[in-house]
Image (tube, rainbow, N blue to C red; front, side):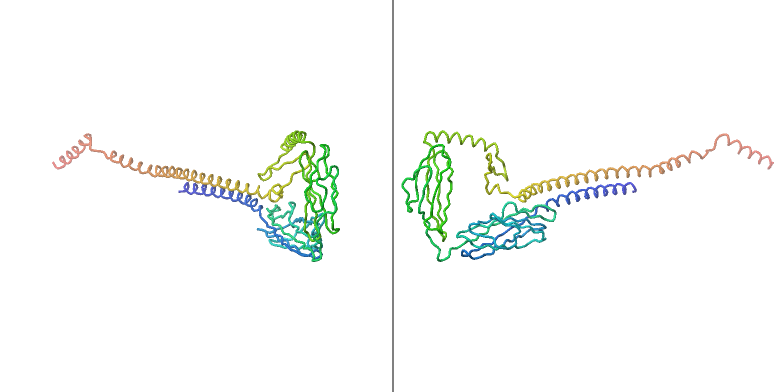
Length: 383
């Protein structure tokens, strides 16, 4: 019985040790999994007439408490001018905010003045970070807001050009404010088309896009924006170099540029992004914040944790089965030994009982004469 109790205690001790080990491992890994918390940022939209002010509200909703906040907002300075609000820094179309309050939901307000006609998006940049209680970056998702600047009733709608000149080259046809498409050609050594465009209305604005020329066909755009926000685009189609030279040169440059770019390709979140020698080709897919990267790593780590926990459970179950089998076998051996010890006294008793009858002496022939002698003596006395 004592041996059985000892085996049971041993089995209980081993199981308790394994359970403690699994709980410690699970607790440590659950801490890492909990670190990958999520947060959503939403930004309100607004509209107003030029000269008026609007307030944009940014709201954070998190799955757990946020212990530190670092926010960056971008906006179009041609339409919005930051006036006041929650921002700590501002400039070049970016607002910065640092907050150390603890919260799961919080709103921040930003006031802008409308300085131009059009629509400006207000969005969170990739440098935004939210830190949870484990000092880990949360996985942040966000939606854009927008602010629309409307023209006043007395604003001009004139979006035409008064003059348009280029250098080098000659426009074909000759310039006319009502003509919006022109062609020209330049030598192969011309890399930039110089454009001189003057708006017909002094309150209108003019912008030139794609003035740098590649070999072959190019298109340069002159965009005129009226005071009330209406736009008109003038197009200049430019051919750089002759056709034969352009075709050969373009193919050679394309091959060399492809080789140079391929050497610098980088995979971000499963999307191939390309780098050239001096410039990163940015895209929405490449705009992955540090928090999002950690969130993905955490998801992978979560699967690793569950797999490890499953393996530990299998090992624990196997250990319990093996120990149970060994315990049963040891118990049987102990029981057989106890039975053998109990059987030994009975065998000794049987042997002693069997030995007692041998001690009873049967009458021998030598004893018979003594009776005769006694009888003889009695007979003599009688006589």
